[in-house]
Image (cartoon, rainbow, N blue to C red; front, side, top):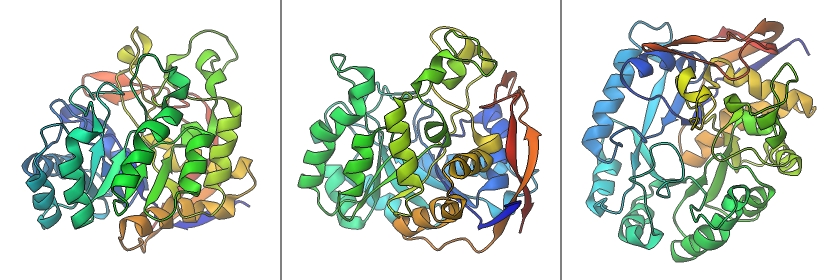
Length: 356
């Protein structure tokens, strides 16, 4: 196969940052995707409808000089805290000028800018009750932060300790388990009945935890460019993710979790967690699906299933990928600094060439 045309895909999990950094990165996602769910973990976080409206305005303003600004729709989220008032969920659901499609649960301390997150899930039960009532989706960073739990086990433990009781108490609440990384998460979502789905990143489909200690040129040592949270897992978990992504099961769909950080902050200790995949997001997914011999399954995963779960219409525009090897740039401007794209300096086999 030399080319592949897809319904224009959506990114159901994206970080854009703010200010000059937002201006540096938003164009990459707008070029590839029709819509994206924008994560709210700014400093300070996006916790109110008014803040979400203002942030969306900044995103759209940052796109004004970009070619594809008229065809990209940011879908906003609210960051849940222990102090989130239930009425804020009603205001979000009723908002007509700014699409607020979900709320994000960050366990306090689990990842970048999550310090204001939730310590005990029971603290936000009144909020979750309203979310269930009005049909607001809950997006979950599914890891416990208990220091006694090994970092490679935190997702599986989250399912047992938090997610299973949560779904028992709120059976009508729609939940997206974000950026899943383990076979336990795959199995739980697969067998979890209606109302639960999961996003999967390109980097978790392509890499296992060995790549934390192996650079592209084969040198061994700590390689912070591949450090992300949830952390990369063993090869058997990566294979489980691939099997889920290529299965055609509509519970699994694309979410890049593209997370930009300045190169200096990635390369110095303590390194920031996140992979900036936006400049080559769709090409990376195509590589993963082709390696599994299932390019024909990419369109459903990338373009159909997420929209269906969120109750939104599928896009009508298309994009075309061609087998046209190209090299990902090693560095790009990032506000007053630089940023290193994921797989920078490497040659990818697929390239997006047409957008209609």
